[in-house]
Length: 183
Length: 194
Image (cartoon, rainbow over all chains, first blue to last red; front, side):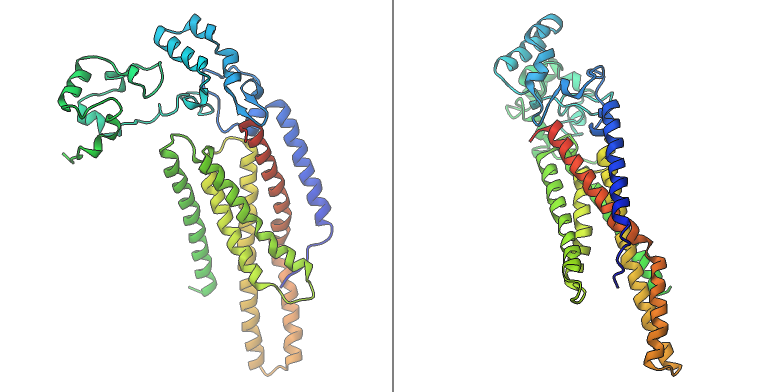
């Protein structure tokens, strides 16, 4: 049984929808981030005032926009040597910043992709006897790169222990060879 | 427990399970790339496919209005119901339980209202048809003629208008939903790129 709606419904609906669009337009002028952003900006970029500082219309966030602030000179001025060299080479080679970085993950969120998760899996600490990522890694020069591995007693002993199987990059798949035990 | 009550509980359980399942699937799909599934290429694809499935619901509306003199397009109504459930579920997988930007939140709310009012509407029709059928049998047992039965049932059927509040929600909010979806897609393409 189909009972058609009264004819007055259409103009009322259109009027309410136009009202909603007008309100969204007004809100867009006042605070566009609340309308469109998938999350708050991190503490590193929280002071940025406009979306178009990083986003290019219909192209998204672009490396050109990033380098507008984070230039070769900027890295030379404020970064430590490994960070500076790593990023300057990426800029010179025309690599996209979005290969490694992200945003809108919350005020305290990290902006390096993969940094919030443990790429080795949760058993790596148990298997290696370590307690922290920094027992083996130095952060700041890019995620997952061999240059990040610390050359200390621990890493040397782990490489030696693997009899050649423990190579940079192989630790992420430790469960392929090792069986996790319940005790 | 009466059949309508059992049906209501079953539908509510299905709705809640489907919503929880869609959100759980999105969480699982978000684990590996370490970013919300909706921000990945596959997540975008899920959104587009969901929108495509949702657009199938309008075939029923078109058929119903384009040929009003013909009988009710029952087959298209089934497509309408199936697409009206499957499409929004895909959108839930696309969106996940991440609520920050106002435009997609409003679009999601509008979508929820449209789906919920549709489910309520279907339930109302089921109840009315069931009641009419029972009443017809009782009136026939009382010895009333077919004309008398039809007259009384017509009075009952007209009272269905009381329950038709869902219609005032279902179609109008669909317009709002479509406008918000267009804004969401426009905003996503503008800020995220193609």
